[in-house]
Image (cartoon, rainbow, N blue to C red; front, top):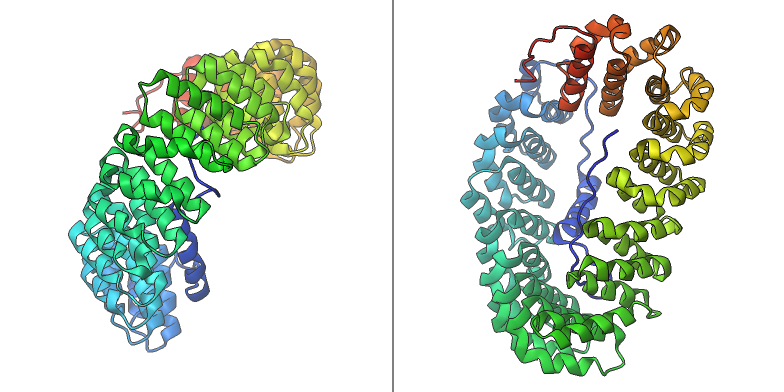
Length: 580
């Protein structure tokens, strides 16, 4: 049962409230608008209708018939590429609804709809705002020549509809540095300045040519605009050095969020922001904990070779972890993580934050643990004791495998968590310990009766990983073979095979279940079934044909398990197209 990798969180300082990235904000904003105007359900007969029949329906005088055909073609995706010209013709229909649905269908076809790019560009000036928005989304999906796309989106920045402007800005961010001139121009317009600053922040160092425009944006009357401009300058980094004087002035801004963002920007610029060091130090003496915390981190970044400054920053940030304000705690923790301390130094700091910090800080600390290697195990064990961090800690421990044996007792105790997802993650972590999890098998066996079927399946899998020493669980696992849930059945059979011993009765009980598991729509179930059949070896020759079929499975791990199983049975395995 392979797990998805844990995403690495960048240890960036963030000012006041948690900040969503540009694309997330724009996506939600546009999704709400699109859902209210364009409903494009999947027609039940789309798969059966021929392209010829659908394209012929585009000639109907009935608008509803045309829209139904357009939607059916769209849901065929790239399979409708031969209908692109017909759909392009619909972009000139007198009905805005037809034009919008046609643009949406071309969007679903994707790059294969490139011949429609010119017509979609013309829709950027359509009289209907919704049509203009969908045209932008379609161009994003089709990916025509970048110059064409950037020019179209730049033109849309002058649109009277804010949703169209936001859609255009969202599309521009995909083009990196090439889009900066258009975004820089958008900074000069009050209506698009906020979103342009946010988009430039997403581009990071690629936005360095917009530094002067961002400096000018710091004079905007709106605090949100000033804040996003500062964050963008910070994301640009050292090449935003010309902005240091203007950023320093914002440390005295009337808005606290802007002041915090100014300190953040100076810290990200690094040594080039040295002229602002004295002003930053002054903030450490003021009764503004959040600003002082960001400034402490910034000073350490500005003077990386100053051992005394770094020591003072670490001491200040460590002390701030006990601040009553959860936001100050989180900012201090992010600052410490961002300073890239030695694992032996950072590990106890993270453990303290996990045990006593506010929930947000504790979760941030847990997310930082995987980068500490073996030094993280004690802190992960501490995270198991706290409800807010237990699931994430178990998820990480499952990836450590046998190295997580020091957390065995904590994992066993965590099995009482009220959340079935957490219990399941704990079981996967115990499974990763293999036979070393034997002392916890009592708790695992108890989980075979869990009310949640996925927990029961994970418990069976964990017992299978423990192996022969879990034979006391065989009676309950045998009952699991009769479960109405197919995953529980296969997991039970998997466990019984790995616990053994392999005999005639075991083969008779598990073979039909495992053969059925090879047909599962779940990759892990197909892979586990093949592995278990391989464990049975020659007595499972009855499954040879079913396994041969799985050697052409779309998932490489399933193919590999099937081939290995056939080889253990003594069958001759030819190379398959999927293996070459």
